[in-house]
Length: 92
Image 1: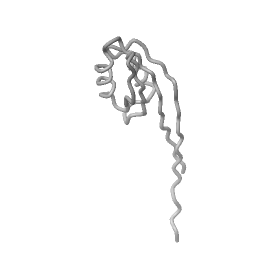
Image 2: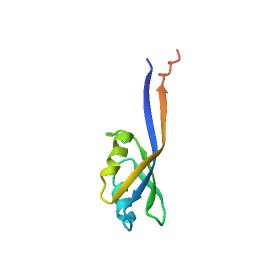
Image 3: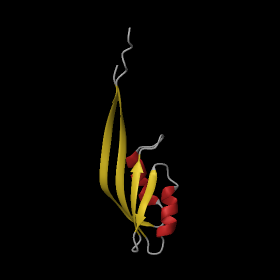
Image 4: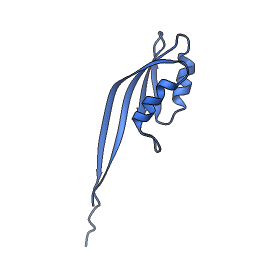
């Protein structure tokens, strides 16, 4: 029997209100599967979102709009990795 699972990874550009990038960064990193990789002087954050055990990646990306201090988000990258698990045959 073959089972398959998916793993999703998204790259998102988050634009914070002027002067709020640090507080937005803290809120983002508190979310499961979210990591902030860079921040620019004009309050933009480079973020990755991956599937969490209890939440799909795209559900989290949608939630980013609701974080206090976020002006906008742009999905710039999405990748789905398909993993297939094949049971090993036992040797006689």
